[in-house]
Amino acid sequence: MEQKPFMAAKITDRVYWVGAIDWAVRDFHGYATDRGTTYNAYLIMGTEPILVDTVKAPFRDEMLARIASVMDLSRIRHIISNHSEMDHSGCLPEMIEMIKPRKVIASAMGVKTLRDHFPLVGELTAVSDGERMILGDASLTFMETRMLHWPDSMFTYLADERLLFSQDGFGMHLASHERFDDGLPGELLLNEAAKYYANIILPFSPVVSNLPSRMEKAGIRPVIIAPDHGPVWRKGAGEIVGRYAAWAAQRRTPRAIVAYDTMWGSTALMARAIGEGIARGGAGVKLMPLGASHRSDIATELLDAGAFILGSPTLNNNLFPTVADLLCYLKGLKPAHLIGAAFGSWGWSGEAVKQVAEALAAMNVPTIGEGVGVKYVPGPEALQRCAALGRAVADHLKSTYGA
Ligand code: FEO
Image 1 (cartoon, rainbow, N blue to C red):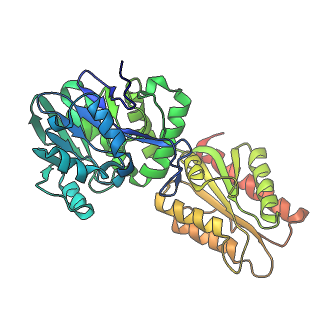
Image 2 (image 1 turned 135 degrees about the vertical axis):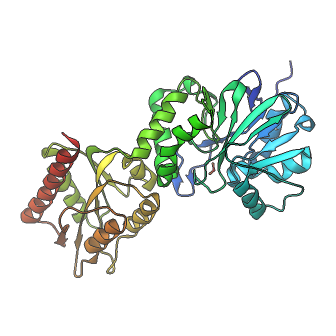
């Protein structure tokens, strides 16, 4: 029997996954994708077959081979673009040329965004929020999800299968041959989904908070959620919607993240003393030295931690570069309801502690105290001040969130 290297995967009787697996990608615009990712494209079979999204351009042949394993490309009648970012639209221009579809469908903003990306030939069909469309024997509902996470983003719902194509929403960066959530360990799924939320979706939490009621109003009650990255939710479709609601609320726990970098070990010593103070004060704490912790892992920890304590040595009157990088990244993610504190050592000027405190204030993260600064090397008195700061952080966390 002929062995085809790339096969479509059956999701339901009429929906196939025809995407690509990227085992190599390790950076996704600043997010460390340690486990690679998938670019999910789907085929809705029927009297007028529909391709939902495409894949990143270098993976075109893999997608074409998977499509060919279930149908001739020329039989596809329509293409839906739920999201214009190029990991999903990268093959769209070529697909349009090869398939010559009757309709290429996107949100109104998606039509504009796609035209800003590519010199696309032919007409694009803009659909509005809540619009229903019959394509052959497929009944589709479109729901705009502006800023989840681009202005063009939308969901497509296949009503008779109760299947939601959710583009980046409910996705995760995880390369795997398992196509369904129930084939993967629950803890892995939860960790990767949380990391994705913390690094991609978090700034748009107000949009997420409104999703359940908007979906209900539009009659979108999925039992299967098929995102554009990672596994299809079959067993856990309800659970991931619930998790998104909880993450959007940014509920916090009595736990602190102490992130820091160090030049000669002084700021690291201060971090350890602060950590001891927090732990002895009865709150949870995790130290994340920037030499060993990626910014996107710190963002993930801050999804439910209640405090963000940040330490920087002063280098040439400035923040340490890794600390500046972290602050820049986190500022864009707009975490809410955190409290913070600043600390660091210095030699002859000592601006960094104040700069960390100012950066936290600019992120709407109120700080406990004025921070702790130490000249050169912390002695016993300075370490006591660090431990006292830790204790104050723990007291605040416990009084706010309970022990
Ligand atoms: Fe997976 Fe926003 O692209």
